[in-house]
Image (cartoon, rainbow, N blue to C red; front, side, top):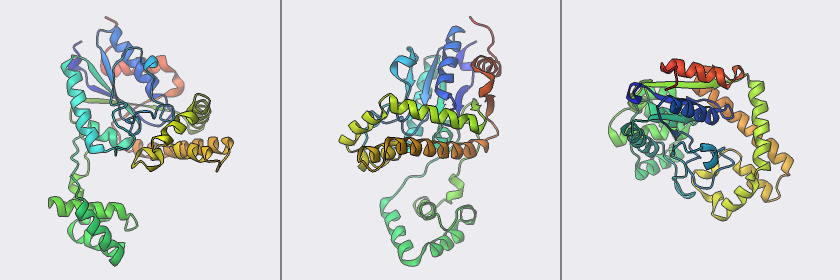
Length: 314
């Protein structure tokens, strides 16, 4: 089967569910059937060079020659942008298709996944407008700003709580900047090209144990040393990189504010909290085909290939 006849594949879902490992297995299985697969990361923090262990980035050795894209493309001091990611990702997808290969998107950053797969437009920004609106919010109160939003865009106002100042200001900024309602820019569940989304689900207690084990392994395999090196490059003062799960806890450990045991507990807790946010996000998308993690890799791989209409090796 020609790769152009196969939908783009996305392996999405919760942290520590095994997305990266499964994507590698799928790419290898596709290769055995004469369909080269190339993997695209949809992880907001794997974009950064040097943030490897803490983001569970697949190492060069683990990739076994399978091309990976949108890893290590930003310096620490650069700000990650979902709009910029969408632009880069679409270019990569088109390039892979031109090579007669199959793109496999992998990640758990929900908005980045949607940006890659769906028909979404990201309105620009204007720092001047945003600064003025923020000053007005400080002077008048966010309730007044929310009332203003309700007058020009009642649909957005109904969905955005008055307490969410950042989103209220953003919605007003978009309206002033484009003349369009912020609600009109909200994403529809409409793929920009045929896509098969796969997710790997686990019972939450099992996933929590996987998170605990992975946290321990990260610390054993050099996470502390990684953060120490990144601190020298200014990690603590970065616009977005410092927000990656676990990195602040390790910085606190290095500063002597907490013990290694406390850092381990904090990282595991924050990762569990992230998993539950991801669970809430991805459960809203009815298009995802959920694979049972407890069924085993072989069964899930067979199911994925069946969904793709590929069964026999070349």
